[in-house]
Every structure is written in structure tokens, then in C-alpha cells.
Image (cartoon, rainbow, N blue to C red):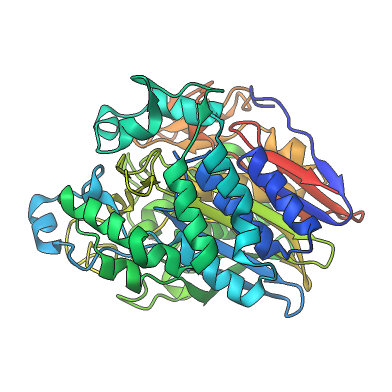
Length: 516
């Protein structure tokens, strides 16, 4: 068991919900009890997350949604990731050889509210005003600053905290917000009220869009009103692979989720040959998969990508160059998540994010909206699948997944963590699908992760044989790492094999689960 302890599974008959904040989970529960659909609950919870977890989620960010419709028995993907602004100077960025990580130039077009709108028009029941009322009240009346937000503020890079609007949003009397300190966001409440009255046009047009565009222009950014007006979220077909007799569904590229499926392909082969698998073998497969396939991921608007481009379903890794010492290295990232499942068999898994903690650091004083820094997920070098280009989406780390058994959703799960969402997903999903352990037990198991320098991080409690095995492969290994940011924070729900529903919220970060 990890040093964070073992969370307890929650069990119920009608609905199971988990999210990254207790107010978000409780808001979703009330919406369902008021007759709302799971998509209604998702929208209300998502809005609450933008208020309670602004370091990880914001109206100025993006989202990725998977939805299992119990009527059609289909997993649908709603891609709400943003595109580079039309004015993005791709050649100048190529000449500089680096993408902006902070400031208004680091922001792609925010698209989360478009995701809400497309989901609501297809599966929503309740009116916008009813869904957004709890988030409006929380923003206007104030909430207690969470430990998670306070920790991220204390750890903020000076280049982030020096950005325009940061101090006014996250400091009181010259000091960063502390855990438990009241936090009001009146301008955010006004934005949410405008969306409640006017729907998506309340964000992508009118005074909100004018304020965001003017703020970006004032500080040398590229995001304009036209970018906001043309923002869109798109329904896509999921990609999936077989594992342990089930289908594991994820979003296709531009999401990196296919890397999780390839890791499961290789793990399935190893299990068939050897039986039980070890964490060090999982690490080596992950490094090989990330090295082989990650650079192939980009916006399919640039080049159509197919499962065969990633050898999806193949049980072996074809010959190729050996991974370098930094294969799989990734920048740290954060996100907020929501999952739910109901007695009818519908299931939803959402991740939303500003990318790295506190995103670009820029907060528009006119709206209270924190902008993302997802432009840094592009590469500046031209001619690559993920090269920066106007009106193109970057390769995206948001990787929710839904597991289907027969014609029913069995498991829906999310976790923050950048590209390590894929490695955390393998560790959690394999435990859930290979064993009879509770979700709480699986979430409490020690995990491994890959750090930005290309080394391997191991949580306390990891099998002592893992570290020497990895060092024997020439990898740098750090043991007994207690930094929660490195290992994700699973939120998961499933249809329990003995009947009913089960939910769990990982203790590594703030999270809350209910089932009834």
C-alpha cells in the first residue's frame, strides 16, 4: 500500500460519482436527484471544478469527454480541446526553436464551454440556469480555498506568478491564498451567469469574448474574438482494444490515449506467456511505447491517423531503435476529473485542464478567467505531426477511458498527470480487470511514474525487487517518492460484478466519491 493510504470504495444501487472536489461531486449528486441526466451532472460538476480548482481547471481551458450511451451501447468521444489561434506565428516560433510556456502567448483557444454545449444538446435534460446555479453561488458567495489549490500556489514557478492578473486573483493582502481561506470570484460568477442566460454564446461572444481578446491583445497574445467565435467541440468515434475479455475505449489522436492501449496490448502478450506481470516489466514496456509512438501523435486535421499507424492490437513491438535515456520524458501537468455511472448503464468520464498547474498564469481581470498554457504542448520544429500551426490542435494529454464488457459499461476512470495518465491508466485498469480487488484497494496500491528527466519514480511500498531490476536496465530510479503530483489521482466508477455500483476517489490529491 502507498504512503497515502487506502481509500474506501463507496457502493450504491442507483448512481456512482467521483470527482476532484467534494463540492463538484455533491453538485452532481443533487442534479441527478433533481431528474438530470449524467451529462447534466457532468456540466454542473465541471462548472463547479472551474470555481474550486482553478489551478487545474478553468473556463479558459479544454476538456475531453467519453460517454457510454446505454441505449445505443456505443462509446462516444467529445473532443473539447482547443486550437492554436489564427494569428499564431508558426515560422517565428520555429526560428526561436521553443514554444511559450507562460503568458498569454501560451494559450490555445479555450473550448470547455463548447464541450458542455455539444454534450447538453445531445444528452442534456435540465436548463443551463439550473445546472450552473451551484457554481455561480460558489463563485459569488465564496468557498474555502482547498489544500490542493494552496499547495499549487505555494509551489508556483515565479514565471507563472508574475503574469498579469495572477496576484489579484490568488493573493489577499499581498499573501497567497492559504488552505481554508475564503475565496470569492465575483467576475467568474458574472461569466457563469452570462452562460446560464445565453448558453455557449455567453462565453464565445458578447462582453466575455471582448474582454478575453482585449486582455490578450494588451499583453501581446494571439487569441482574438474570431478564435473564440470559431471554437468548436467535435463528436468522434472512440478507439479501443481488447484486454482481459473487455474492450478498453479511449479518445483517438490528438489525444495520447492510444499509448495506454499499446501498453495494454504488450501486457496482454506478456501475461499470456508468463502469467503474473511485474511493475518493472510494465515500466520497460511504457518507455518503449512512448519512445516509439508518442511523436506520431498530432491533430488528424493535419494528417488522418488510423489505429494501424500505432500498431493497435498488435501483441508485439516491431523492431526499431532502442529507447534513449530520456524516452518517455514529459512535463508535469494537472487536470480535474469527473466520472459517473447510473443504474440504466450510462457512463461518463471527463478530464478538463489548463495543462500545467496554474496554466499560463494569466488571469483576465475583466472575467476572472485563467488562461491555459496548452500551446507548450506543440513542438516548434516544423514538419512534425505535432508542429505548431494556426487553427490546429496540439497533441493532448487528457486521457479518460471507459471499459465495456459485452454491451454494458463496466468501468469509467480518469486521472491527472500529463502523459503519465496513460501509465497510471495501465496500472489501475489492469488491476481492476485482472483481479477481484475493490477499486479502493487498487487505488491504494503503490505506483510508478516517469519523470521529466527520463527516470523512474517509485512510491513507498513498491515491491523491493522493482528498483534493482530497473537499474539493471540502465535506468535512473528514485525510490520512496512521496510527491503526489507525480502519481496521478484516480477517480473511478464501475458496475460491480455482484450487482450495484462502486465508486472510488484516490487519496493522493483532493477527491470525493459517492454512491447511492
